[in-house]
Amino acid sequence: MPSTSLLHIYKEVSDKVATIFMVPLIRFDYPTTDYLYLLYKDLLANKQIHIKSLSAVTHIKLILAPLTDKHAILHYHWLEFQDLKSGIGLIYKLICITLYKAFGGSIVWTVHNLYPHNKKWRPQHKKLYQWFAGICDMILVHTPKAVELVSKEYEVDSKKIRVYPHPQFPAKFIEKTEAVSHINTKLGLQLTPEIPIIGCFGAISAYKRYPELIDIVDQLSVAKQMIIAGYIKKGMHEVDSKLIESAKSRDWLFYHRGFISEDLLPNLMNIIDVCVFNFDDILTSGGIELALAYNKPVVAPRLEALIHYETHSNVHLFNSENECVELITKLITG
Image 1 (cartoon, one colour):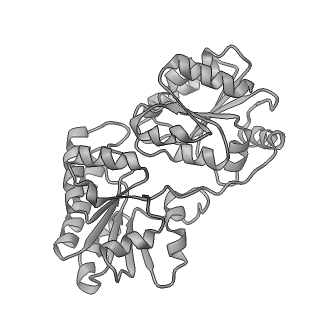
Image 2: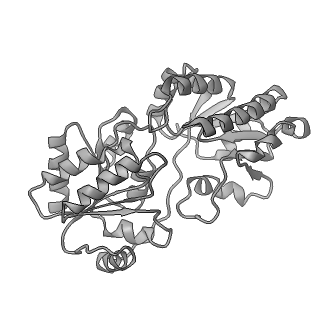
Image 3: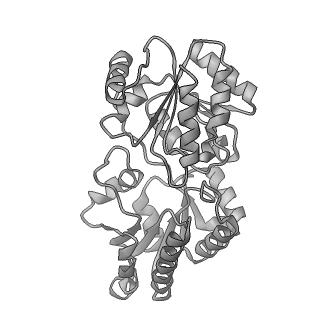
């Protein structure tokens, strides 16, 4: 059964916990979309618990922390490296974490992805994650299936893993015509509210398989529009270039390459009739959770990590491109 209280989970590790060191930094300027802010929102209001959000540089504070507060817990989230610079930074972080653990510190790790989405340095990441899973006192995941996947891939006892639900995104509902008008004005688009709009949003990255997704939407024999929107992740300039070219050659495809501000996000979500994702691999999807917060139908591939959505009335999983075409057609034509 999923745990419903983050504090309860922490108390399993240290019953007198009063300080949580958390990595990475919480983005307090994004209270309705930042995963970490939403995750810790209740604890931030708890005067008996102190959340100390650490940057890469301030990892050094961890080293002596167990000597001054033996009940403190380090809660780590994303742990990866992509190039020489981030690799050097990771070594520094691991030295701080190793000393923190050696001095008696406790560690909780939330696994968001089995491996980085760009698939770089996979063997090295596997060794890193197996080591980190081994020294952690507890591992958190957001779905029951993820327990099995993490336990198998990292060779860690499933008894160390807990399921904690993904934090819910607050939704603001706006009439579609008004939202389309606002999006067109702010982003310089020419969307038509009367024609169904298919949406794919979030960070622009290759694992979302945009070329294949665009080919799928190309096959729809009904009137449609599609918007792809999100900021470009590091190293994804080729993906960005291909999306620009795809949008130029299709009058139904609109591409916004940039961060979606919190004030604009509700308008974006309210113009979408169907949210479509085409992940090649994933463990947890914040995009699906956001779509469901806005009561949007979701179409996504039938991956192991998404099987738990199979019973959700608003989620439709597909096994093939043809099935995806059929599902989207059915949803946008009613």
